[in-house]
Image (cartoon, rainbow, N blue to C red; front, side, top):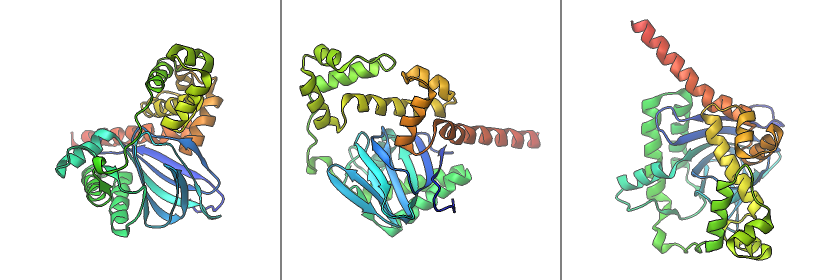
Amino acid sequence: MSTASADVARFWRHPGLPGVELLRAHFVRHAFTRHSHDAYTLAVIDAGTEVYDYRGTTHWVGADGIALVEPGVVHTGHSGGPEGWRYRVLYVDEEVVSAAAADLGMAAAPAFASSSAHDPAAAEVLRTAHRAAERGDRLSASSLTRQALHRLLAGHTRGRPAGAPTPAPHRMVDRAREILRERLADPPSLEELAATVGASPFSLLRAFQRDLGLPPHAYLNDVRVQLARRLLADGTPPAETAARLGFADQAHLTRHFKRRTGATPGAFRRGVHGAAERRAAAASGQLCGIA
């Protein structure tokens, strides 16, 4: 990761806490397209500056800063300078965050007070948890990750009722989303989709942009990439993943996947699935040695 002009990204699964994926990356030229995640995104910046648009605000987050992105919220991401930015990211399922919130006596996972925070102490806790997970230290990694979640929830959230309410999605948008998810491999045209939900194409486009921040076709590809992450992490080959999710071919999957994750499907699969295989092999070897 020392080459200034190179974009490098490594993904893997948390060794001791199900529902958590991790990324360590250095991005210089890569710019994330507008996208969302189905998990909480907690990113600690090691060096450089990341710039991203989130809920109508542009955030500049530098070293020891933390980017906090909630599930389903569309955002971007690019470098704030020629040197790029280095960061460590935890993608944490909502169930894991809700459990951490319950530990603190919260009725539900609260909203973050801001999408960015400069908190060197919390950043170091996150960084330490991330490094333990990278080493494969299951006990330390799971303990430290829970500590990091508790610290972020206690110090950087607000009760959802006190925050600005998120507009309820239009019913036609909800129904259109259901249809697109049901027909990933064979999506309808915009005209067909609009007619099915009883709207004009223009009104459906406008409602999608209002509720989700993406037009229907971009929303569909966003969902496809989220599902592709799960399939690839479970070991499904990229070509099969592309076919199952309705991408025209593997190159089509690769183009959309890299825009949203910063890595190719093959690299992501090797990082996440390969790490699990290596841990299993190591465990097997230890058992054999004991025997």
